Amino acid sequence: MEKNYNTRIIMAALLLCGFSGYLSETAINIAMTNLMEVFQVSAATVQWLTTGYMLTIGILTPISAMLLQMFSTRKLFTISLTSLIVGTVISALALNFEMLMFGRIFQAIGMSTLIPLLFNTVLIIYPQNKRGAAMGLVGLVTMFAPAIGPTFGGLVVGYLTWQYIFWLSLPFLVIGLLMGLRYLENVTAVTKQKIDLLSVLLSTIGFGGVVYGFSQVGEGSEGWGNPVVISSILVGLVGLALFVWRQNVMSNPLMNLSVFKYPMYVVGLVLVAIVPMIFMATLIILPMFLQTGAGLSPFTAGLMLLPGSALFGLLSPRIGHLFDLYGAKWLAIPGFVIVSVMLWFFTALSPASSVALMVALHIGLSIGTAMILMPAQTHALNQLPPELYPHGTAVINTVPQVSGAIGIAVAVSILTGGMDKYLHSFSVPARQVEMANAMSAGSHNVFLYMIILALIGLVTAFFIRRGVVRRKEVQA
Image (cartoon, rainbow, N blue to C red; front, side):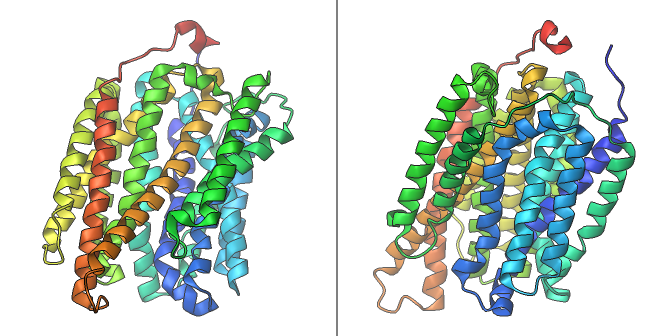
């Protein structure tokens, strides 16, 4: 007999905390220039606030499968929220860059366990025919909050100070913690887990090396020829290969890779990998185009992205209901068609393009993305038996971190290459009008690259078919 959970209050606590965490994660990006002046650090140094954050999540998320089995739901929730709150307070009180960086690492530690916990809890407390709607609400956290982060950050920095990015999110984290302590139930059985230090080490080297390597592509002038980039990626790939080997020979692996034996899980995972590559690259390239190409202020550029981001959040629950009715295939296919068409129109943008056109294209891109991401995630996780839920959520939360870092690195590389090629023929390339045209030329190349990714996703979406976990496995 299935247990009845107070799903509304449980989801409210988890979503409130996740939303607040993700919001401050991307809001700080808009304050980078201000922080460089405050702490007297270079652009390469200040970027570690993002790079270090991504690196920490990339390292720790694969370990979340083990943590979900070692600790009760309430205990893991308390640990993750405590880390988030401590990191937020340290960041808000930061007297120097090192202190701020320390706080960001604590925040990343909390998020690396909170988000897998959120996914795993949804899989347990909701029956399969209602998970789409629940995952639609999760979309408010995983995509909507990061998307509106720059707008929120621009507003805070413009009218207050950068510290309020953290102070304003703190009350919501505390409220979420109190709600969780009062209403959150233990939904998983705690099992004795032996920590395999070699697996942890290989996971750290593998995922950390790949994420760090790709994140360094934009640093310096060497780009892909940077020895740090090449060596980090190679070491990371070797570490991943050894990590996979280690998991396959263990009787109780850190990350059970048997999830890849489920074909529809793999298909969904491919789509989950492609969407962040497009989404994260867009969050980097489009604001740069709006500021350098169209000459808009950072705050105005952030406001232009707000309608599409808000619509994404509003649509996510509705998309979840449609998933419950029709499945992922008939949402993902039109979703990728919409994304491809919007990206094609983006390739024709110029500094003279109207604000209304750019806002409309971003809204269309957000609608298409909303139709793909949550249905693909939910469809993939629905294919697994309950005993693989922790491992499935660990994989499906790790992959976007890696693919997002790769997407950003490739996009920035294509952008700078296109700009350099355009400016090469000008004797005075620093003129503002030519810099704007160069940004347009480089951005067009990036959007063409994204179209290729979207078309790969479209073809993959045709292979989606509805799979049902065997009844025996569900009851186990």
